[in-house]
Length: 618
Image (cartoon, rainbow, N blue to C red; front, top):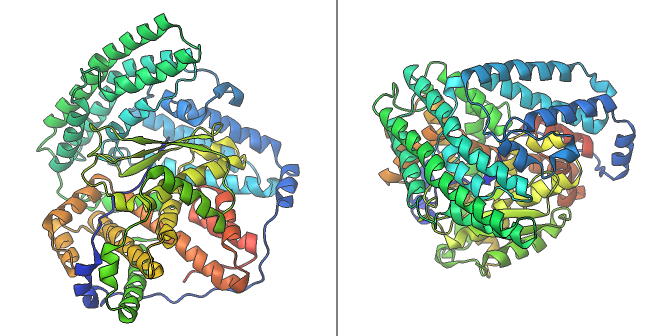
């Protein structure tokens, strides 16, 4: 269960120095010829929805609902962040727990997932409505990926600097909703369960070390630094897990859901648990990580492990939602970068002094609330109408700021889409106010907030809300972030400035994605990374080291952003070529948004069916 959506820490580099090397960047790149069928445009309409409802297979719908009930009931965080009112989904209360993380549990999961897939396959696709056929394909893909993942138990990454358990847990606890007194009681019992759960994580990491899959020292060091920052002032009454708890309690008390005495008792209990159970859990993790130093058996990416390349190819496929090989992805990235290079050279030829303007250009609005409001009004030009929502902007606590993404969005429960939260990491040393507009496009409108709330507003079967397809979700957010530059009023040459910013984004994410592929899939060393970046005008050895460490600590993380973006970009271009003047961006985006998070094979098929076209590979 992933209630947080992050904006990736891409490497940013001004184009001025890169252009000195532009003539050699693409000397070895080769493009791909593309073919697209041209057909008449046929728009989708609401009548298809009503006819779909008439033909739905009731037994299949019940199977999906029961599978959803089963999946969200494995632990308290998953349940609490997935639904606001479990009883309305027929879900019985569960004892507060973080769940289980053991090899025995992994083996049980494999058998259980295979059983679910067998039940899924017992349904004839012909007996299902069109939307159910989509749900079938999407769930089947998710189950296949999860089953395969269980076979690589010791390869999995639980602890990591940005998306690891220890990184996201503090924010998840701080955002845990208190709608009732029972929520508070469950939360406190959950805190008391953390030492047990961390004990299982420690045992897992110990097994990884013993079997030769342990973390390298730099990764251990990064995670320990993060844990130490979190523990800083944890015994103070100003620690954010104490202040946020008291703020949530105060709201309950104001709404007459708690007595003053209950509020005070809960505060006392919470302070004790934070200063003892939570502190002890993180201290134990620190001690264990320290004992693992010097015990890694490899130096480099996943390719150095036995069957590491095989696992990485699986990770690439599951993360991006494609069946593309490493070489095919590299070719797509190189083609996109070459296009950006040619566009940049054309702009330079037409406006030789454009870089003076580019370097001084700034977004005219920098206040977060105003940016979100502007973005929400801008989406009406190219996207379907957004459902009514409220978004609260919060600031990442200082103890977490250096370790989390520039911004992140909390996915709301499927039955409560009106209340949304976006965290802005303004206290981080890497925070850049000038990039806040595209950042909030990524997290807010028309990014994660819009995509999730729009999809939930279509009333999908609830199981769809918990199936994670990072290539779609992060690819969509990166796609709209990329195009948000086109809506910024930079001045006389706004179009050209926007294109240069897009090329900078291509370089930032594209080069990191190639390094990810080559370190984990082909065995690149740090020297290889440094040489690659030098060939692209980047000579800072610290930058090379940072990217190298990042792709080892969180393999394939860059890919869900950039490869996902490229799939949407290519699907749009092919659809435009097929439809010609009949292409309508609102209709195109509506098909994608109505479908919701999916593997790209399903996205492609859905577009083809909606517009009666054939989207051939290029």
